[in-house]
Image 1: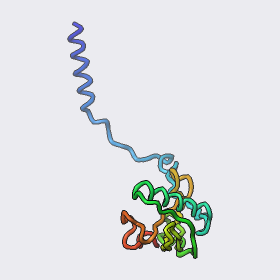
Image 2 (image 1 turned 120 degrees about the vertical axis):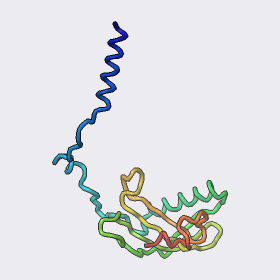
Image 3 (image 1 turned 135 degrees about the vertical axis):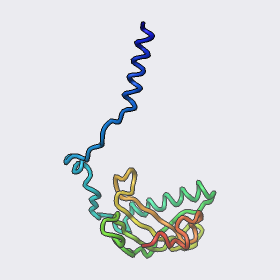
Image 4 (image 1 turned 180 degrees about the vertical axis):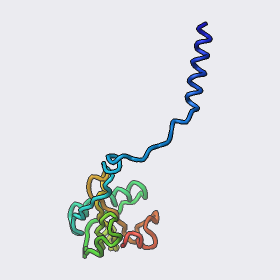
Length: 152
């Protein structure tokens, strides 16, 4: 008898699993308005010559050169920093401050640098972040040609 009960229970479960669960309903008022408000950007970003942004660029450049390219090159100074654009893309795009300047590298050469300070692009989107490209030292061609893709 227990074998028949198990067989019947299995058949019932299989039948119920194959029945349609019903149609999906539309989102309720709460579901449509709760946590779905979209991005709210403030556009409050540090200036191009902010020491914290420049030190982040220098330390990441130094790490990249040493770790991936087996190079001793380091950024030793920044010159002629200027803003080239601010929020130059669509109105609801992530706010970015585009900057350009000159960097002096430890081998004595000077290179152009283009970088963008962008809102909510830092660690887990908690603060601003920075993306950069040193002309002539973009060895993996991330922003080719000649760092054009790092500019507005």
